[in-house]
Amino acid sequence: MHRTSLAGSQCPIARSLDRVGEWWSMLILRDALGGLTRFDQFEKSLGIAPNMLTRRLAGLVEAGLLERRRYSVRPPRDEYLLTERGRDFQPVLWAMIAWGNRHFAPEGESLVLLDRETGAKAEPVLVDRISGKQMTPAAFRAAAGPAAGDRLRRRYALSDPAPETAS
Amino acid sequence: MHRTSLAGSQCPIARSLDRVGEWWSMLILRDALGGLTRFDQFEKSLGIAPNMLTRRLAGLVEAGLLERRRYSVRPPRDEYLLTERGRDFQPVLWAMIAWGNRHFAPEGESLVLLDRETGAKAEPVLVDRISGKQMTPAAFRAAAGPAAGDRLRRRYALSDPAPETAS
Image 1 (tube, each protein chain N blue to C red):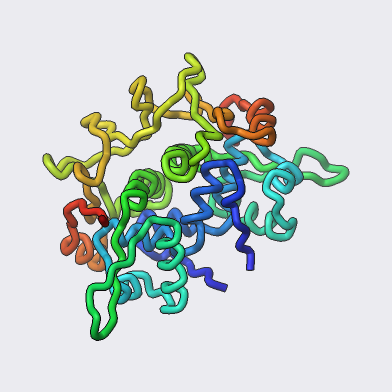
Image 2: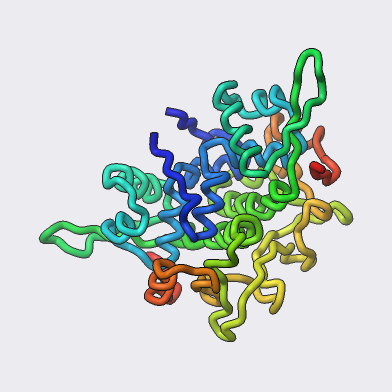
């Protein structure tokens, strides 16, 4: 198939996708973050083939995003609970909701994010916690970090593109 | 293959993944956001087979994330430029960088995000633009929006899980 392991890459996006980049994995995480825990719940929600769901759940357990826990001995049944690492993926999915709502919801928003306390609708934006600035490509850029190897250093030394957009 | 179209789903995450969820697509976007525009640049950066790269680029053009522009007539050569919609995906990838750095960089950060003006290292967090609150699962939840159909309404009427994490 087209699966290539990216775990060896230094790039944190590649490493993340190595854990969650398979087709279905992020939707399973979405459902787990929505409160689903059991095989049949995921199966019904996603309309996914059982053997594929088994593989994807095993991958997410192996990556430390879900934890398998037996909740019935007879018949043997497991549930899948989010770990801290899995729950911490929520902001990525929320950023994706904001992007999807902006670009792929011509009929209006089907899903919104609400403040639990006030019930007010949220507008998710990525912000630098230190300066409070909104993180736009005009204001921020990626750069090689302290643990970067030669390849990553060369790449980010060369490219610091001014934000430019087609047409 | 295991490809299933999610475009028909109302969920904005599913709709987004329908555009960028294929293996390679987000890495191509990463590279485009990093300034790459040409076929051979993507090919070299990703180590991807040419026929696969051709398919993925075509998919991203079709989804309106990249725009193809001819830069040489003889030989015929196209470059791929980000559209507004494609550039707007940057916060999702930056949120993924933050997550990857927190969980999959035991040797330290290989990639960091810097304030272009001050050079200071950023700490990306998702914040509600209206209230300024950090968007944690404890403080915010997903809910059916005005355009939600019955299926999505039922799902989000039933599930409003209290944040709970394994072990």
